[in-house]
Amino acid sequence: FVVVVFQLLLLLLVLLDLDPTKINSKMPMRKSKTLAKIRAGKPVKVCALGHFMPFFVHYAAKNGFDCIWLDLEHRAMDQREVQALLQTAVYQDIDVMVRCPSTEPTKLYRLLEDGASGVMIPLVNTADDVRQLVQRVKFPPLGNRGIDAAGVDANYGSWSWHEGEHSFASYIKDANRETFLCVQIETRQALANVKEIASVEGLDVMFAGPGDLGWRLSEEGGNVEGADHYFSGGIPEAMDIIAAKAKEANCAWGLPVGSPEDVQKYYSMGAQFVCYGGDFSFCMKGLAANSEAMDEAAKKVSDAEKK
Image 1 (tube, rainbow, N blue to C red):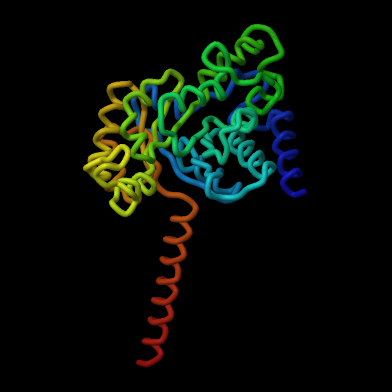
Image 2 (image 1 turned 180 degrees about the vertical axis):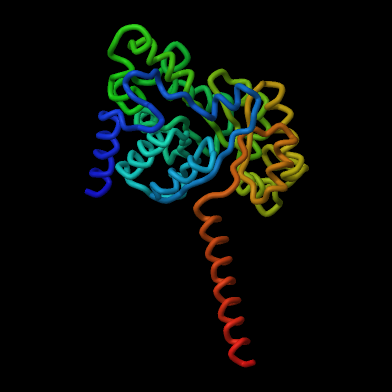
């Protein structure tokens, strides 16, 4: 019930033209900040979210992030919670890329209808896998996405049911241009096929998964001589290959990192889609720092009382 009320309030703000970003029926479709940065050859500022925290969306936008990576592969949220987060993102003018728990066509493009700027698909292995995904998330002639033109992405029809820049045809073109597809490179097979994957028309970003890929490149993960797609290197060598093939195909790439040093390292390698920080890390680091500060304060008081 709370989520439904939250969504209705957001809709009311848009209908009353109270949106500070001026995203209303007088404007064309919202532009993706992620794609604008990629097309300009600049890095995209990405952070991660795995829980229903509408305030996180506000502060990510307020602090200059371009995109939130919303994880539904390993985290649980119901559909109304996801819709509320996506509508909050539209209201705050920040992209959300949803890592999807399913590749069912209607579930993928419904996320785009609900306001997601992009979708991320884990464990993609081949160029044919990517072509099938393009069919599901892009409208004809590039793909075969089903057409509704009445969702959040079309401002409930205000950007699709009129003439000129708000026509049905303009909505189709805008949606194909302002939404993006990201696939994860997480297996030895994907690494072996990365050149072909990067070259698929309709793919915007390749995103390495160091956890999954690192394990699969280890002996414990089955990477032994004679195994399918055996790879003699490790994560550093894999990143070099991904960077090189992405550059050849003019495809953006990135990965999650854990330090400012790694952000700089991968920026220097040409990565444009680097994710640094999220709700987990912020909570862990923030709580640890506050706990330490409180212990230090208590110690100072105790030491003063002993004097």
